[in-house]
Length: 112
Image (tube, rainbow, N blue to C red; front, top):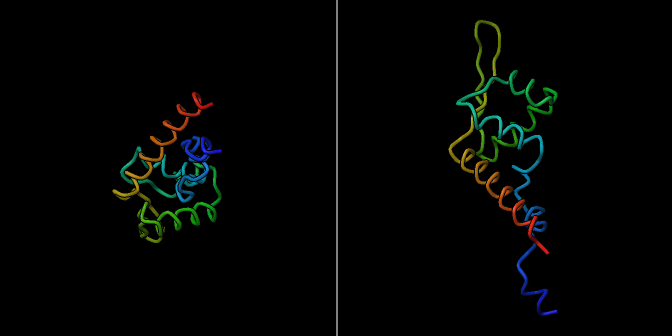
């Protein structure tokens, strides 16, 4: 019993404990897509992720509230536009998240 208590948590437990704001599949897709761009149009995010407008808006709002994404809105003539970009914290967080996933994948392959 003592051995079990001293053992480090499995990579599977660490995976289950990951930040759900980032780890949610739709939000991770949005954040990962934003890694490659300075700023992205809402319509591009919509097409690339396959989310509905309402779902994408909801996820962006959560990411913005968490300080990971900055959303700007405006008009070109009478046409509204919405753009999103990663904050510095968002970029560091998503890059760290992917590094953690890679590490956990490697650990899981060798975990007994």
